[in-house]
Length: 208
Image 1: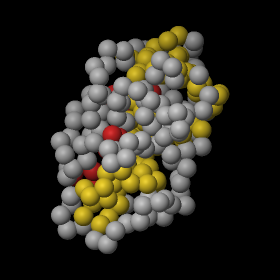
Image 2 (image 1 turned 30 degrees about the vertical axis):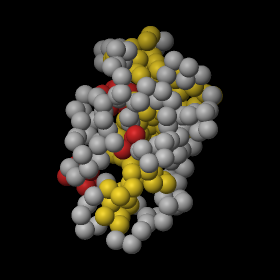
Image 3 (image 1 turned 90 degrees about the horizontal axis):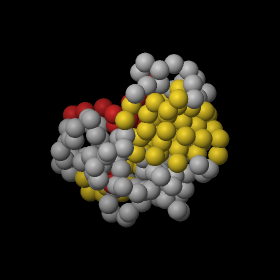
Image 4 (image 1 turned 180 degrees about the horizontal axis):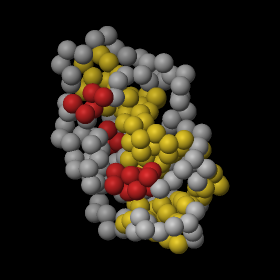
């Protein structure tokens, strides 16, 4: 296990941020946590905690560093893309993975309500054996899964978290090539970084 992940300490009190509803959707296959306990992937793709996208990303780009004007984000679920505007000019596009049919990302007009660069989920994560450090369950929902004796719960990392609708936000995450989250908008790490650095609390977010 890479030492960088040790910075994410377990959170056992679920009162804070229990609305964080992003997570894996395939039982036993925690795609947003692939790589925990394994190789760390390059930060230009999935960041320090997430693997590279499952398909080549020939869509994402950023050209907004010199642009001015009020920011606006539009999320198109059908295209699985997020569009970043400054002063009405498109300056960036990111591939995304939005919510599944059962855990959809609701259509609507919202605003960024919180930014947290080192956010972790209060709901989803993994169980690891205390003695060996080995992952025993990589698809944990701590609301329903009890921590077994001799094990510890590690919260799922969600770097560059930008909350805009209750527990739903944009953040770094694994992109399998289709809608796969529990409602959040996953992005490649380099794109979530650009978005994070160019929004403020109050920035409009439109989900279509």
